[in-house]
Image (tube, rainbow, N blue to C red; front, side, top):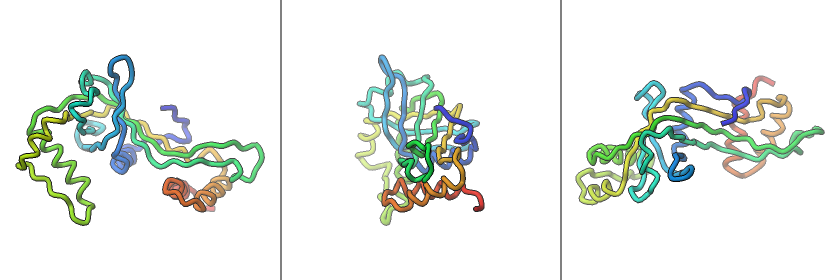
Amino acid sequence: MYIPAAFDVSDQVALFAFAERHSFATLVTTHGDGPFATHLPLLLDRDVGAKGTIVGHVARANPQWRGAAGQTTLVIYQGAHAYVSPTWYAEPNAVPTWNYEAVHAYGTLTLMEDPAELTALVARMVDVYERSMPEPWKFDSAAPMVAGLVKQIVGFRIEVERWEGKAKLNQNHSQERRERVIAALEQLAGEDEQAIAARMRSQLGPS
């Protein structure tokens, strides 16, 4: 990922937090003659490996897992994003841009096909995503449907070798311009625009 110095995010704790907050990610490998991507929820084990380990599963019918073992794999975590109009700067010689946050993780993929290990992974994912529900759905590892489910998926783990983080939030502009962009974004109703405005405001110094 192209990351100008002003937009670089290298703090590992911040990168971990971003990956957990935006855990519906994109898994990219090489399959056949080119890249292949799957969009799926992933979990991060912060303390497994020097830079953490990502775990998840794909449908067995998904061809991506075939040949993926041993590959250097890319995981893309995408945060909020918003268009920035040059009219908001209220100054000449401005151009449109797009503010956003994204994190990339690179590592070697290994497959997980042991039924007991897959069952534990599914149970853990259910727990993570159900715990905030008003009435969490209970995963019963002994239920008859579980054995059938496990046969239909292939798990994987990626021990991360390198993280890249980018927060493009107008850091290369003056504080006055940034404040004008924040004010304009705050007038919009979209969730992404509101989120980018909040992230930009959190990075402003004292006026």
